[in-house]
Image (cartoon, rainbow, N blue to C red):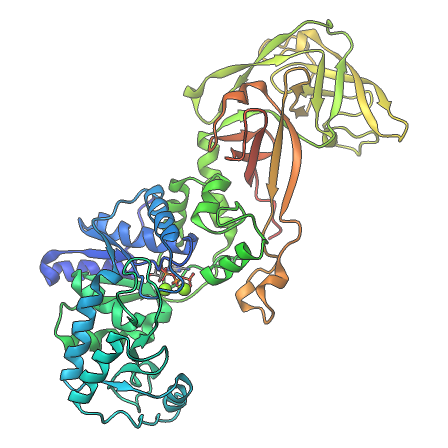
Length: 550
Ligand code: ATP
Ligand code: MG
Ligand code: MG
């Protein structure tokens, strides 16, 4: 990648290193909540956290932020690990916030003993009412003045399971008049009699995000705790707990989250798409999940390149999904083998009337003109070929360089042909073109002296493999669905998946799931794991050119 100037987080890190802060250590963490699959926004955070540690000789922990027992699952834990590794990163430690439940509980008692936390019997509604609005001070809870002894006793009984869900909470005693709502006695613990995917039934009280996150950072001696902008207003609380507990001072730094055009990124919304059957699963190639993008045919390098190009900003913005496509197109252009695929439910058969009936020849096709070392391969050529219906027009406009009655076109890597006769069925549809080929025009040894402007791709009917091709379009029709005043599901594109038949070169028979190709003139395609021995399935990763209206 090209040299770029330092982003503001790198500047902070370099300053810290120059000042000898943290003993010259850089230690970041990536803290997903295991309540869904990772998406491209998480990829940005992963590249940032791991990239920073790589750049400055530091380390990165993978920490599962699993403080909410209800929505979490080990299926998600496994998928998250696979996705981080696939992106090309390896963590220093695999940790779980739930491993710190005992320690966090001790921290809570410490704050109670310092008179900085209290057990509150108010209901959720009462607490919300006490908090009030940002423009006027809140009201103190009637339970705020409880003694340390009473608070300790009640908190221990909360832990012991004496009270039902919602009966009590533990709150920090900070400032009900603060202009920052997060400072108005935030909740530290709530009662939830729920089974946790790791701690089982050991706990019936669970710490809130704000009470768990900074302390987890501190326990792991994280130096730079990077999170998205919405946590900026939480930072005073993050710092307050660390200060009152007198523990390692991790520093929280906020950056702009990734928003992509025509995409929703919240796990809650992605879960809805999955659960309500709008897509085939978390790894549906239309999904912005890492699993979906991978299945679509994206490479880890293209995603890292994308993360690098969008950079790190302090203000929220909306990135054109075309940039993501640009990154994969650039890479695949350099790396993929060019193959011929007639992607058409109803291809047109071309019969070369002057080509011997049982003769099978081969022609040599360059694997990748962008990669001189990639060589050539032999592709069977015979009297009967398929071409795409779009490559023939009965009444062509001027400057139409594909096939038309009486016209000439070159067959990629083979010969120039002339269309002599158009055969139609009873419905008036063109079913066959009877053509002649010009033997002296063979590509590479053309002595015909004929110049044609158009080259089209083809496959030999007798040799072609039938395949299924999945063509994807945007999943959502709104450029910025989150900014709409209607539910994002109203913008689901009913035509985001089109399944068509294709006829591909026989050499693809041995291709494996995940392999990527350029279909000449069509785009980049990747073999889907749904492929079987008898039927290949391709996903279109991206078209050849940016065809989106700008
Ligand atoms: P969502 O809102 O999609 O459910 P989340 O923030 O709740 O996401 P977490 O699992 O808590 O998901 O996120 C793990 C890390 O990834 C956090 O540090 C979070 O800030 C970061 N992250 C999440 N979404 C984005 C995004 N769109 N862009 C950049 N970073 C993100
Ligand atoms: Mg979160
Ligand atoms: Mg979330």
